[in-house]
Length: 385
Image (tube, rainbow, N blue to C red; front, side, top):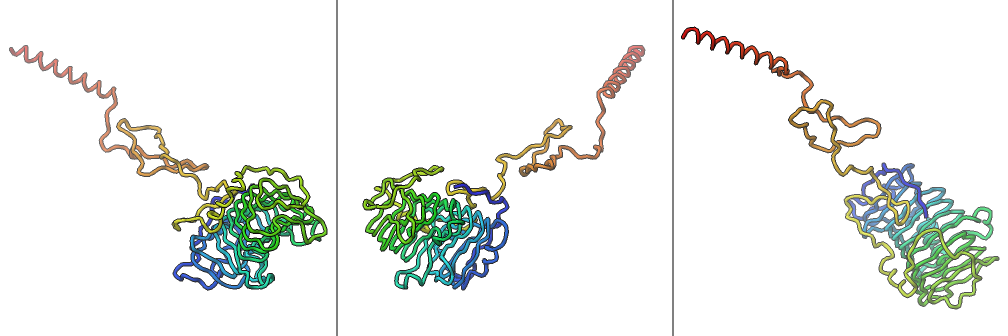
C-alpha cells in the first residue's frame, strides 16, 4: 500500500490527559482532529464519553501504553492519509457509529489497535468495530486485536451500491487476532482485492470470512481455531470468490475459487502453523517513552521523517582573505539554507588594525638605510684612529 507523504512540519500536540488522569471527554482535542493540516495527536490516559468524532486528512492519532477511549466512535469520511496506532477503543454504541468507521476515504492505516465491546448486549446495540464502506480504497489493518463483539468488520455496506463500490476496496488485513467475535470477520462486498494474511481466528461464533457480491479475496497463512463456518458466501444475491493458501481449519470451504492469487507488495507469510504467535503481538503493544511523538508513516514499513535532516558535521565557511594564523572556529554548526547562504565565519575584524604592518618594499628600504648609516660610522671611526 502506498501512502502520500505527510508534510514535514507536523504539529505535535500535548497529551490528551495532562493533570487529570481520567478526562471526561475527547472534546479538548476534537478540534485538532478535525482541523486541516498535518498533525500528530497523542492519547494519554483514559478517555470516556458518548460521541462520534471526525478525523481530517493527514492526521496521526497514537495511543500511549495504557491509554484507552471508551464510548467514542472515530469517523473518517472523504479524507486521506490517516493513521491510527496503538489505540484501545471499546464499547461504542450504535448511535455513535463504529469504533472506527471509514467512508469514501483513501490511504488509511490502522495498526496495533485493540477494538472491542461485549457479547452481553444484543447484536445491534453496538455497530461495527472497523467498517470500510462507500468506495474507500487502499486501507491497511495490521497487528490489531478485534474481540468480544458481534459484528466485527464490514467491507461494503449494501448489495445495491455496485455503481460506487465496484473497482474499489483494496484492503489488507495483516497479522491480526480475531477472538470471540460473531460474524463479519470480515464480510466483503465488491472487494476488488482483499488480502487476509497471517490472521488468527479463535472462537468465531457464526461466520468468519464472508465473500459477497463478486468480492475477490485471498486468504493465506491463516488459522481458524474453534471457529464456525470459517469461509462462506452468505446473505447476498451474488456470491464472492476466495483463493485459499495454507489455511488451517477451513477444509470445508465451498466458496468458488477466485482470481486474486497475488498482491503487488512485499510481505512475509508466517505459515499457518506459526500464526499462533500473532496473539502475542496484536493489539495495543507498542511502547513509547512519551518524550516525543513518533513520526507518521506513509506505509506500515516506511516511516515518514517529521523534521528536516540535520547535517552530521558542521559546515565550514572558508573566508576570502584568511589570516595566516588560523580562521576562527565556529562554536556551533552552521545550518545549510537552500536559498540563502549561511553567515560566513569572520576570521578578522573588518576595521583596520591600530598598528599598521609595513610591506616588503618598506622593510627593504629601512634595512638599506641602516646598512648605509652603519658603514658611515665605521669609516669615521677609522679616520679618527
